[in-house]
Length: 441
Image 1 (cartoon, rainbow, N blue to C red):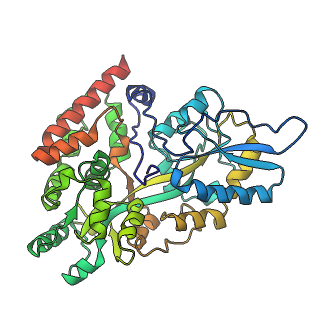
Image 2: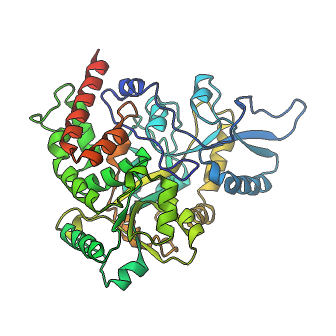
């Protein structure tokens, strides 16, 4: 889940009358940052009078892969003479739907923003596309927790990212450290590194998204079933607190104990460090581990292309089998019900989902395949999380279910600074209660 700078996008939520919560989140917190910045680009797509190429509009969220997709679109045009495909020029998708002029095909991160359109039924059913049968059930299910529309497959997963602990293999080898499989082993590794004068974990607390994406999500993910938790929390309505069936104070208590412990092994200047600082420092070998996803690998490699890195899922229990990876549908394909050229749009979706096309995209962009016949990740830096993808041992980050009207990252910054994670959990329960009251009203 990341923006054009490689950062995860969007925090979503399921329910509290999800539509009401989205409204409470400031009109839906528009998260799409890709596309070519500039004019609205909402003109019609029909060919010019007198005949000419039929024009399809393609909206792709991530600006860093616009050139990649542009090359694919030119391949599609060569296969289908008479069709011209243009990138939509909007920076966000809301105006397209407000003006009833959405792009013919969308390629977007599955998050809170996309959930708005899924639940309103303005995305077509893609269940009949050939590729829909090639998507494993556990990956298809990842599109459901944020929103669904009855009887429809609104989104076809296109690209999966999996995040965990990135580690410096040279440092681990020099200190003869194993890849930890349990919480105790992980703490032992951190202690050994600290005794040797090596910073165990590089943290970048100045940018809030790095705190909730890493520390918060990783600590929660293997201890709490996040979709189930937020679904049950929503169903409780206003009854949220330490004695309610589910609550942040109750269900997130152990994960936040783990998070508090992890902060002891951060770099001392973490509060003032940004994501770019972290990539630079980690690339220079200034820490053994880094709580980031594959979006950081390219920037780290720019510092030292020969740095040997691996990835593992953070263990937060004493059972090795409990380990899971944080995942997201980094891109999914969809066709609006208002697409001007729905049949041609389906042809484009089918083309993009062809094994040769989709597998190459995921290989070239450090992502994991989403189809039953997808090859494993070939990049050795991704290999450590491939077994979790294969087995479906993964989770959607807890932070992605929290609406942007709740400043989760700021709460986490304060909790790390003070060590008081209990107050943060009380605050989260209070915020959720207020959202429920607002939704009920």
